[in-house]
Length: 472
Image 1 (spheres, rainbow, N blue to C red):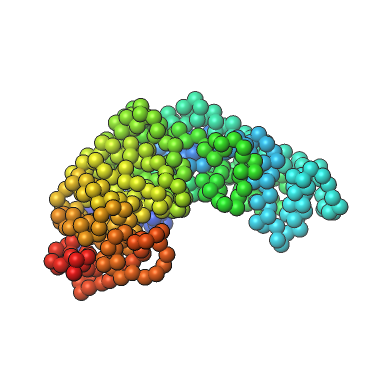
Image 2 (cartoon, rainbow, N blue to C red; image 1 turned 30 degrees about the vertical axis):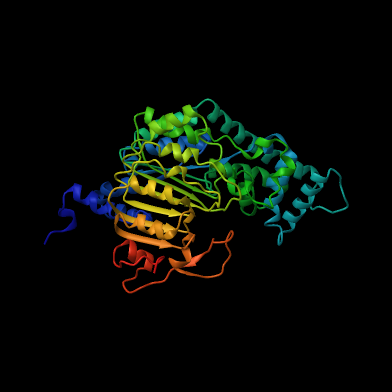
């Protein structure tokens, strides 16, 4: 009988690599079993590394990617689209209103000390005192405010220095270029736990020493105060940024590192094979890639791209530019995977038309608005056989779904799905139900299944049936 450890090291590495990447506990258990399995699995410990515009984050990032063992398994680099704000750094009143007060208010219901602090900071904003009694002197709360705001200012200055002199882009690009495996670059604006825990604990202890409070109770509040602002905060209707934002550029943080990073990685000798944007809304992309020189440089840096994903979760009421995404995909003949999941009703197909994607096999379009000529032009750039195509809530702005299904039928598919089509004759693709719409002819529809698990439209496109459901 052949035992596991009788296998050569190459096979042990492949076996360990077959573990689900989401379950690091299996890798940790494997490393503890014996020295050979430890050597065969240690490189899988850190498949994803996040890096942002802070010195501590950059140092951790480069340390991981220069590690002789762990670096071999890193495949995904995540860049959070967050920023420390100059308005919050320059104006202490803004910092109190938009950072300190919300952090305390969310946790003040059952804590006397937090309610007392909240009363002081509200008086601070009003600019006058009242008769509200406090457990501690106002001078102590003011010292605490200066301490936390001073740390925020330090983080802001550090961020701006790393951006302005190119240190962030150059350091990340040089480290990514050393990655031996295909690089996945993810941009998102989700909350990210990137603050250094050790330095945070020192600050919390100093804060609590001043006020005689429990560090464990105040640590999460302090952490929230020192976290960078996300785009989710900026687009919240109830956040009230406009009160302290007379400058039109207030809601447009410096995003130049997004534009520069793929090109810098290419110049350093690396390649990005998979780019993903997972955003709360499309606002971060609004002003990116507007210059001709920028678009040309970006297009040349992404020619080896094999997969592209753009997900926008929050609907927008205005038409937004997709210049950046369009530039990324300008010359990508090796693209094999494309996902556009766009919640905005103002989405336009600039990303899709006039492209040649002879290797594109997996396509997911959701919330995209197309005309029939746009759809035909998109299909003309695809190979004769597509492994998987999924159309979700696609709105046909011009033309009919009868003609759209005829155009889609000209390709062969391993799997084809159409869900909730919208536009002229969409009601014949599925069965309409009354759940809103943006105007006459704009309907939300649900699917009707036939034997074999296909809707009538899917069965027609897959050539299971010969009758176009929009013409029957």
